[in-house]
Image (spheres, rainbow, N blue to C red):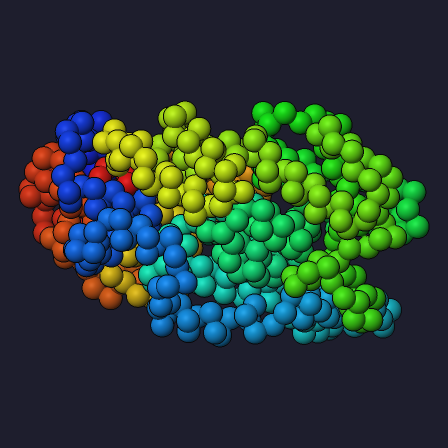
Length: 521
């Protein structure tokens, strides 16, 4: 406790002088500064040897390498985790069937338990074995927890171990953009496949393909309730499927494509919801009958629940063509100028600055439009821009909890088999992986994460890692000189250097990991 209190005083002193710590950034950056900058922005932070590797190969070659992840051999650690993953071995249909079997078993056991209790009361015997029934009832919750742990381990293993770092960074970006929450019903088992099937494969491809993949994935259709979206007067309107649901249509415009100021109206949202009627998931009866899904992910288009009437979306007439209407509208949204600007702004905010320069956003939007939404081309435009390399934007981004935790694991060269400590830290920080309840996803701006409680949790985590007490994460305390060489280049301010020099040996690494320089990237 005494050691932590001392660290708290030192780290707080450093944190309150964040501005002065970066006063040297107004000077022209050195070659080492540029190397560190490109590593920080294109990866989850440097691992030992990365600075020298990128310096040797050159910045341009490094950017080219990261923009082409298929050319980079995947790490054995990632391959092993992916190979044994349940969501890799089983299809979505199989996963959902398993859930429904457990739900049915839970229902039957609850009924049996209730009947047993009533029978026992009638006989005056209260010795009912509730434990056995409760154990069976809890099997569904246990299955959900196991799937959550599996998804978290797989994602964090990729974030830490994969040499395809930009692909992982973009996977995180796009997952937040097309957010779904693991705590909602069937998404307990759909989130992992959603990331693997609808996000990562398209993270550096064409935006239109990414948009379509998320639109046709059961995880999104369930999360935003489009699986229930039904034309009220259609033949299939019954039970849960009795009316129009605008949830997905609204977020498809506001968050996924046009942006809140993208020029659409409430009438457009309603008309788009009509276009999307019937797009959902196979029900139990359809699964038993092996009804073919719309796509490879398990989505299903039900013509008997679709509105075949004429619609007008963004001023364009959409005739009643069933499933083809959805493709026509996705084409329209993906190529709209507002979408180009909205996506470009978000990318610039993520990679450059919380308040990105309009000149950069406009250049990126123009590239987006001229390349039919080629994500790789838009990123290259940004990475080659003068704004990306402007010294005032270097080390200006404040790390999210995910980036902070992963950057620590990478910097300390830890290779954990499990990530329980990281997952717990992220929950304490308010960023549980896959746990954002709202469809706008987690923020990546400083004002979202810089607060006293968050800062204290970061110091706790840094102290645990630096002392070798992060259970299952590090085997021994990291050496502070090696940490400095790995993560900082020439970025440590004189004040931080002085504080580290005066600190007791056991605290030096903790101060490095809790420094303003490491909190930013």
